[in-house]
Each structure stands twice: as C-alpha cells, then as structure tokens.
Length: 289
Length: 289
Image (cartoon, rainbow over all chains, first blue to last red; front, side, top):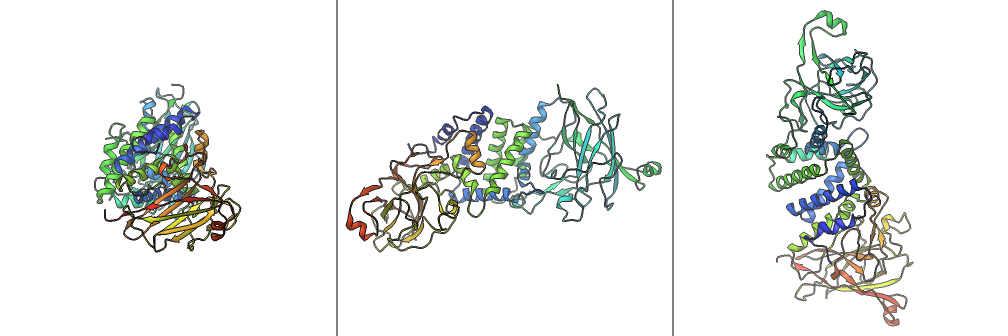
C-alpha cells in the first residue's frame, strides 16, 4: 500500500520495530511521532522542507573544535534548559541548582593554584570569587575540583576573541583546600551576545530576538562520591537577567559582586583596591542518594 | 521566575512573539511545542541529549557537495515522504504521482539528445526507456524537459562510485520532441543500499533496519505552464519494493522492464538483442489549476 499521511507514523514505526535497545526504540518512536506531528501541523511545501534541511545542515557545518552551533540551537529553543531542568528534578533540592553547559566549554581549563587569577590581561574590573564546597549537611568536600570559565569585560570568551585573549584565558581548574574552600581572582564578566555569525544568529535576526546573555561565570564542580553540578553564577544587576537568550537564569544563582574597599585584602590577593567580590558556596548531592 | 518544565513552551514562545514573518512564526511555534513535547516524553538525561546533539552535528558534517546526509536522515524517518505526500495532495489526482527527490541529485545531468544512452560503461543489462509527456486531457507537451538519474547495475550512483563511473554517468537531461515523446537507453538499475558510512547508516544498524531501496530511475519532468513532477520509475519484481528504506514506493510508479526480442528495434536503438524495455508516460498538471 502507498505511504499516506494517515498511516505515515505506523509505517515508519514498523521499520523500527526490531530495534534491540529498548531506550533507543523508545526515543525513535517518540521522535517519529513528534516529527510527523510537526510536519502535519506545519504542512511545509517541499521547498520549505528543503530550506529546513539546509538550515540543519548549515548548523552542523558551522561546528568545529571551537564552535558548537547545535548546542546554541538547542539553547535558543529552550531545549537545553528543559533537559537540564528535568535532570535537576531528579536530584535532591538542597544541592546547588544547575544550569546549562553552554557551547564554550570547548577548551580544557588550565590547572591553577588557589588564589591565582584566571585573567591574564587585566583590562577588566578586578574581582575575587570565593566559596566553599560542602554536602547538604554542611560537611566540607576537601579536594573538590572547580572548573570555571567566563567571558571578559568585552563579553568574549578566549576562543572567540580572534587571538585577543590567549587560549585558556578566563578559564581555570582549581582544587578545593582541606576545608573545601576555593578562591581565585578574575575580572567581572560582561553580558554578551551568543555568536551570531552562524545559522542560529540568522534565526535570531529573522525572529527579532536579541542574542544577549546576562553576565555570568560558568562552574562545573565535582568530587568523588558526589553528583557533579554544572552551573553559572550570575552577576546581580546585569542587563538581560530577565531575558537570557538561552533561558538559563535561576534566581538562586544570582550573586552580588559587591565593591569592597579593603587595602589589606586587596594586597593579600594581589588586587587593586577597591575591588569587587562575590561569594558562591556550592552544595553537592552525595551520589548514593 | 525560573524556567520550569510546566512553563517551558510559554517561555520560549514569548521570545519568538515579535517574529515579523507570520509563516516563520507559525513554524517556530510548532517546532517549539513539538520539540518540548518530545523532550518531556523521552526525558533525556543531559548525557543522552549531548549524544543527540553530537548525532545531529555529525549528520551536518557528513554533508559536502556530493553527499547530503540530512536528506538521508529525513528520508529514513519518513519525513521526506510525508512532506512529499502532503504536497501531492494539493495537486490534482490525474497527474503522475510524485515521490522523494533523494540525496543524489547533486550533479547537474548532462544535456543529451533523444535516443542517447545515459550509461557510458555498458556493463549492465541494456534497456530502452520511452514515454511521453502530456496534460491530463492527453494534449502533448512538446519540449518538456526530462531530467533522469539512476544507479548502475551494481547499485551505485556516479558520485559514490569512487571514480568507477565518470561524473554524469547514469544521468541525462532530455528534451521531449514535438509530440511530447522521449526515449533514451540505459542499463537496468539495481536495488541498492543508501549510503551507510555516515551517522544515518549507524542509526540503521543500531535499529536493525536494512538500508535498501528497490531498483528505480529518478525523473524530474517540467515544462512551462505545468507543475513539475519529481518522481521515480520502479522496476517491477525488484527486491525491497515492499520495504523501501525511505518509504518512497507508489504502486502507480512500478513498471515492467520487459525483455524484448526484436532485432530491428535493437539495431535502431543501438542496443544488443534481446534487450529490456519500459514505458513511462508522464502526465503533468497545468500550473493554473
């Protein structure tokens, strides 16, 4: 019998009937149902569908070792944040909230000592970020690994700065001390546009969406025996906190980057005085729970 | 307010609210609803979603000027055929049925004279394909353009033969005569697997689907004042007619490639005797209807 609109889902599901892995089978079945549902709703002409195929192809072709345009596409459609939100619901609610990884974790962060600066250019406003890693009951997690990466005061990551920043600038991999504490200096990041020179940028322009993300520092914190957390610290008062292009703001992750006038502390941390300071205490969920 | 599973669709749709083009707005709205619906059904872990992103990225990166892996992905999900079927429903039912374009129309077909062979290797079983182009009322369409492309007897298109076939082999662009007739010689194509060396091939293996398409010759027939038709002629008796990997078989497009023992006809068409012969009369819908 000829393929028909009415039976299209059944015809394609039948072809997937022998999928050995039950999870893959479930995913393909749902994908086919929703994809065909989308097509029946929208009823694209063949020419429109070809445009769609070209768009999806261009997204893949924009990706390289320093650019992940598909994550960006997932981000601006809220898909990354929805996946992240559903995963977070499976975790206990007393751990630090997670948020999206984003497309810029593409360069390994250089290992740095506690107190080092992640910024080698010094062109931004100096800040100190300090915090601790602990279990929900307050037990410190000594030796936790804290991976951070951030844009600079112009809103650029190293990999998209066209060589203005050396690779690894704005990034650091720290190890918490025996009491689970960490601290490092940096510069206050700026809000920034997600990259707009690819197909996702074209989509944002065509839909009159702005490409901006509020200022933030990315964190992945992990330790043996705990569920790792991928998250951001957002800079209180930053523009776009209420209209993040990738929907990733959680109120519990916004921190005051307060101005501190303390010559002694500035000297101890090799910072100018006054400087900015933010505190981010991370709570990790034990992996067994 | 934080992004939540319950409100994710509304949050993302709000971001698209100012889309100026109503069609784009409609498409993005439906895409967001179905994408979030898929994600809520499947509830991928972040690791699974990353695998999905990598898969979509790899499909784009497999594409080049001779390979369109995204069309292949659309094809094996039945999406291409569903779009094609919905478009065909908008056309009058007395025209020749259309079917999918497929991923191999990537090289312009060389212009050839009526009666020429599209095959320069002569390694397959010779055949003559003849037909006519007419309106539904039987009025001939002189000067119609008939673009054909096909795999050879080993099931390979020129672009995937690794140089065994010169580019343009198996392809021809013909112009119907004053009575709308066309004829050319070729070889009987074989059934063949769609390319399996990319991500789509990996998906077929993981889901235990076979990659085969029944034997066919692709046609695009067009003439000023008529709706062009993109279609295939399938070889009657070919394997996989009832399980085409891309769901594109329509019974009305299957033709007998009969063996003909006719020394005079063979000599006239510069063919060995006996040879195979198929007839494909194409009916085009007037564009104004």
